[in-house]
Amino acid sequence: MRRFLLALSLVPLAGCGIAPSNSQRLTEAALEMNTAARFGRMDVALERVGSRAREDFMSRHADWGTRLRVVDVEFGGFEMTQRDEAEVYLDVLWLRNDEATVRSTRVAQRWRDERGHWELVDEERKDGDTGLLGEPPPEEKKAAGDAAGAVDPVRQPGRSLHTRVIRDE
Image (cartoon, rainbow, N blue to C red; front, side):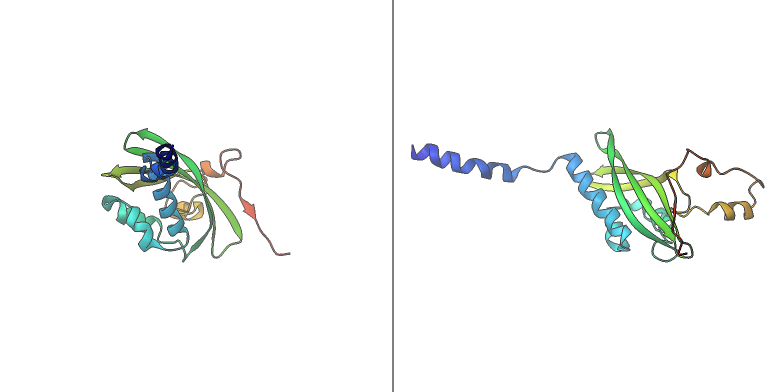
């Protein structure tokens, strides 16, 4: 009877040594990196960015905290594309410091598991407003020599996330 009670009391401790799954490690890495970037902790965020992607990451996020402010980052889930690769989706609410328009952008990040350590290898805007990842705003595109009168597909009704305008009247 004592052996049975001893074995029964050790059962809860058996789960303590289980390593987190691949998807749990990915979720933790993505949340840690994106939360750090949101709050301007690029030193912490860069720990989760692959060495080949660091320079691109820094140039894409150079305006974060200076020319634009990230209001919120929502984790939109992920998709395992291969055993060691995944695509993570984020919904980012942000605004330019010289405007009162809250913008929304959906970002897709590609992550790769490098010997048990998930790293960001690339990211791109999937939907919503431009400018979050270093793209020039539509006005600057026209000034830079794009065709005059070209329609920005992001601004077409029904093709982007909602933009909220906050005005003090």
